[in-house]
Image (cartoon, rainbow over all chains, first blue to last red; front, side):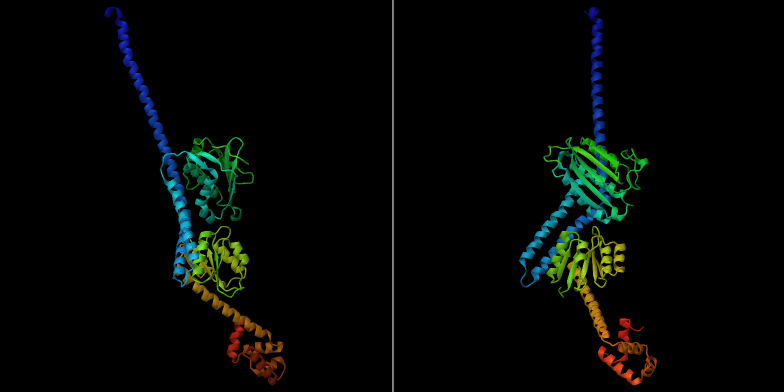
Length: 284
Length: 205
């Protein structure tokens, strides 16, 4: 038998270990690729987080102001209530109003801190329904005192329907913060009376919502055109050159598109469109 | 129009505006709160005694610009206090140079606020007293005849009756009559007081 089947037996005996080695190699490669991908994702998350932290660092004055305002109101209300109670026949209705205002202002300060904590947290990507109009409003309230400090007028022109998109609210807020701060920076040498940012949301026919941030700054200079989304390309003195690159990545991960064009009337229009989760009713 | 000391409060943050108004009212002050600088400028009445408390950072017109606009609108003697969330040195220096009487940082403690407002009250009363004194004197001066007015200028310049009579081409007796009528109308007995008054009203030309 050995004499008759020697070669097939040898061949099978050789093929089996070879095949298992091959299978093992393929498995190993797959695992390495998955590891590399996981590492890349982790790094992207780290960078995203770092960018958020740096944006918030720039905004620290503004954020401090947003917390200081309610604190001011709380202190004055509390001291007013104490003064009222020290009177002979205290106006209890007024004291009650003061206490209610204290509760309200405390919630207001709490909300700022809550938003901050979300932005500072290094969390897993969440996917939930995000109301784009609410996102715009809460972003602007974070930036409010920075905008006032830089004498910039802001107008919101938000579509009537509540545009819901699927995505990570923190990442999307990061994109909006970035675009608005770019608009603010672009207007550093614009005349004070002309400084203006328009943020609009519009439902498009193709089931997307467009979010546009329009400024009256220097616009995109010819030599910058086409480079602005490249990582580490920056036009700012202290920029890392990662803002727009990161925003673009985030929006793409949300099946959307980030665009940046010059406005005909001067300034730039930055915007992104995202698929609307639920077909909005009565979209303009 | 009331004669009660009124605090004009301007802050774009409704929560802060309400709270500060409540605190000042609890202390017994009359408060006129405004959420926008423009509204304040429109309604502000220079004739009402009071002070203005302005937030430094406001959209449109910030506190310092508002102070300038107030001065330009004839409210230069209105005492101005600033409240600010930032309280940086350059801003406070500019504010104080422009005549602000105090610069308070948010959150504002009641004691600081009341102290600042009560010193504003004293300042406002003083400037109003001076102003009304000046006005009543001006009214008295207006009752003088042209001749008495002439005599007044000469007396203030230190001329003797005899010299004035020579200057005006009349006799000393007539000058004496004019002079005593003039003093009587102005309610002044001593030449020194007359000189002081003339200086205040800028009459000694």
